[in-house]
Length: 403
Ligand code: CTP
Image 1: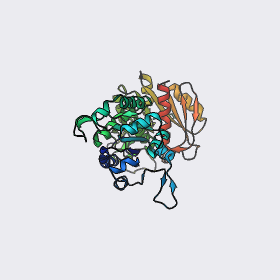
Image 2: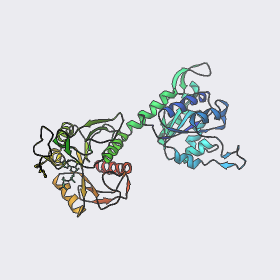
Image 3: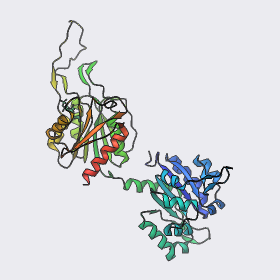
Image 4: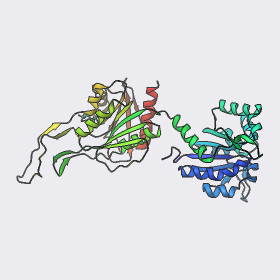
C-alpha cells in the first residue's frame, strides 16, 4: 500500500509543454490511492484540457477565482483548497510560476492557493536547459527550498526546443515515487522497530475447549497501523482475532496461548525500540490440559488453574533501551491501580481504560483512555475512535522519546 493512500493531493499545473504529462501524473496519484484535485494556471490550459484532468481526477478542476461556467458565479475558495490538501504538488513548475511563488506574487488561483496552503509543497521544474541554470531560476529554487518546499529536480534529455540538457520535468511515476520516499524518510518512526501484542489468548482445557476473553484485538491492530503509518517496522503478535491488516511494514505473528505470546514477545523484544502490550492475556490457565475431550460425567467440574507468565512484567525486568507501554483495565480506584502497575512492571507509559466509562473497552470501536507517564503525570482523553486513540498514544510516545 502506498503511503499516499487516502491522502489529499492538490496538483498545481503551470503553463509548460510538460503539462501534457499531468494526465498520467493524476492517474499515478489515483493508482496510489490518493484523492486528487487540480488547480491550473490560465496558461496551462493551452497544453492540457481541464476536461481531461477532471475526468481522470473525478473532481472539478479549478483555474479561476470564480466559477464562470455557473450563472451564480461561485467563488473558488483557495483557502479551502489549500487546507484540504495534505500535499501540494506543482508540476510542471515553470520559471514564471516558480519566480512568482518565491516572491509572493498572487495573480492567479494556483498562486493564491500556494500562499494559503499549510501543507508540504513539492515543485517539479520544467524549462529549457539555459533557463534551468539561469541565476534567477536557481534563486527561485533556493528561495522556495528555504521556505521548506521540496524540489523534484528536472531530468536531462531532449527538450521541447530540440536542445539536449537538464530541464525536463521528472517523469510522472518518478514524481510519485520521489514524493513517497520523501514522505517515508520524514516519518517520525522511520528506522524504529515497534513490538505490539494484541487480542486475547486462548488457554486450552482439552483439545476442543479453552478459557478465553472477549478482546477483539481492535485497539492493538489500530496501534499497529498507526505505528506503520508513522514509518515503523511493526511486529504484531496477535492472539486469535478476526482483525485483518495488510501493510508492508507490519508482520503479524499469530499465537494462541499466553505462553506462545510470551515466547514470541521475548524473541522480538531485544530488537525493538518501542513495545506496546495491549493484549488481554489470560491471567490463569488450566494446570493440566486433558489430552482427550473431557466427558460430562459428573454434575460439577473443577478446573485447577495456575498463573500465566506476566509478559509485560517480564519485559519490564529486562528492558534496556526499549520504551515500554502497558495497558490497565480497571473497575475501581483506577488511577491508583494503574500507577501501581506502571511502577511494578517498570513501564514508561501506561494506558488506563476504565470499565466505568461508556464506549471504552473490548468490543467497541471507541475507547476512552488516560495516559500516565513515568512521572505519574496523567492526561485524560475524551471518548474517541480507537484509530484516534492510537494517534494520541504515538504523539505522547514520540514527544516523550524526543523530550
Ligand atoms: N499482561 C501481560 N501478560 C499477562 C497479563 C497481563 O503482558 N500474563 C499485560 C497486558 O497486556 C496489559 C497489562 O499487562 O498491558 C495489564 O494487564 P491487566 O490484566 O490489567 O493487569 P494485571 O497485571 O494482570 O493485574 P490484574 O489482572 O490483577 O489487574
